Length: 415
Image 1 (spheres, rainbow, N blue to C red):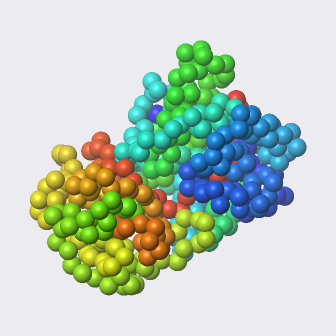
Image 2: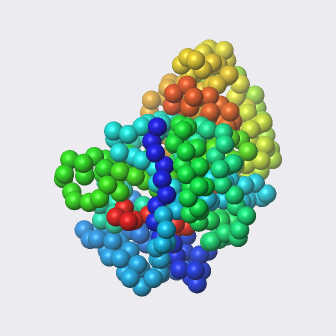
Image 3: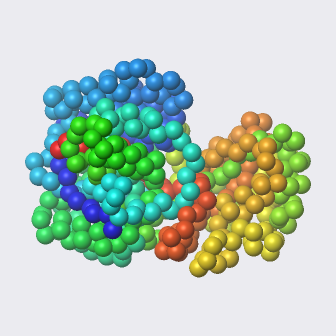
């Protein structure tokens, strides 16, 4: 098993407005939202986390400038280093639900124990993340790991007020500093003794592994700190996690009619009302991820086009074709597998992924897409069974929410 350890965290100076400084993870920030974040405060974490706008060609010195800015923030005490190595209990609260875990340094060197992806990943160029890591030698945002253990939450106590707190887009983010040696040892033991499954951060973890391997080959100078990555670890427990679906937004060369015909070969289609509250019941927050829609788990799969909507009931042949490998069973079939079977009949279809149900429906109504497939959240128990079996779900099966904010704590690879 990979090891989990405390580290010397760096945090924004206490007098600074943390609400204006933290940002979402880099991979959910749109170009518009990046502009909004940059306008909030000149020291917003997005300055370092995303020095190049999504989709833009990076300037030759973009990552060098990010490293210089980071060094400047340190010298001016915008970022302050904690005196002692610590773990950082972290809690996110929204609408009465709490997700509580611990941020620490997780071993990521290629020759250490396994950290298992919970789903396949879509290809992505990791050049940007590697250039940022090489220039700044810092972890700005934590990856998110799910512990297969059952007693992580019993290993630490949150009796004092948090050391840092930010409320952004309706989510309260709280961070504590845990430097008591006995509690630190107990938490590390709990994480070390259980498997870790990645919820978010697959590409950052792969980038960190590549960078660690590069340093081990002697291709770049640096400390062994590159063999670790900052990670937020939470128990894989339905009491801790909120999991939403990731929908499919579709453009079909032959139009929506061709899609309906293809889907009908694998599903029984039942017409349903497009404006049904169980379809559209979601309140988005502008430019930010929304929470999973109420009722989505009970809604069933749906196909929505500009002219109608259908509830999709998979046939036995579809379930058989989508069934996961043993020892999993047909009861562990996930919607992403079911829709992949149907879309296999349309090799020319263009698929875009989006967790925001309202945005998906607006794309269809506005003619930006021919159709959408609305998926259901994967139950946490099913995620656990896939992980325990050592299998990966199809790509874009789950959306964990809320997201840890970038900038609550930073990790210097050389510290």
